[in-house]
Image (cartoon, rainbow, N blue to C red; front, side, top):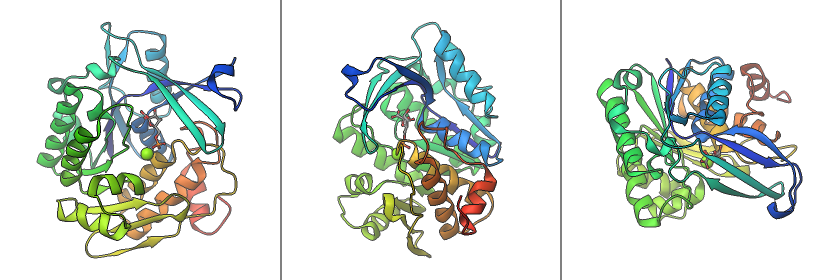
Length: 312
Ligand code: CKP
Ligand code: MG
């Protein structure tokens, strides 16, 4: 397997109209989870990926597994439990960039993942382990599982890519600060958004944020700047990739995961930091033009076209 990732994937119920949620009558069912967004994105670009989690023994759990597996992601390490239901969440979108989410995921099946259940060989056998800051926020055990997975990656020489993906609805600031910084220090690549970088380091400038993260132990830092692209540094090379103009902003959710998928795809192809970042920006800019988290993830050819200066 080239990439392994793990975390909670839920059914997303997205309203059929851009009005406050209390006025919505119809919803569309989607599958969403930062980690499966990345795994599916990578699979679509031709990479081998695996995702593990815990799903409820219910229709949504079966739907998620079939959906993820249907996109070519290995789900052999996914567990099923009778103890809790599969998590769901609702999206409220009043305008293209005004989005709120409402989670129904407390004590969900995924939050019952156990550190002891980790298949170390599965993580150690991958070239890259993708980790997000959502998983350690789910429960105490999920936090232990996250650190166990990081340990397994370290032990087997698996490269760690970390997206902090801070979700304020899931934990308090002190805990988030401590745990996410601890993970960042273990990672080969840290991919925060600007606000996340500011929170983690207390610095306001992308160059300072990247510096701080590296001084604390991270191999390289890539600070995502939204429409302005991304700043990157590994201590040897640094710079800003300006990104790609977005023709149609339909749904910014999943953009960060698209970036991660493109970036990881670049690393797997042996690209240097600047090209991998450019590939991340290319995928991110394509994803925001389509509604849904995974629906807009491009095939390899579409990314190459955009990188070559075509329309993407
Ligand atoms: O940072 P992004 O907009 O790329 O992440 C969106 C995902 O996993 C979404 O799919 C949702 O399920 C989540 O983040 C989450 O748990 O908030
Ligand atoms: Mg994100």
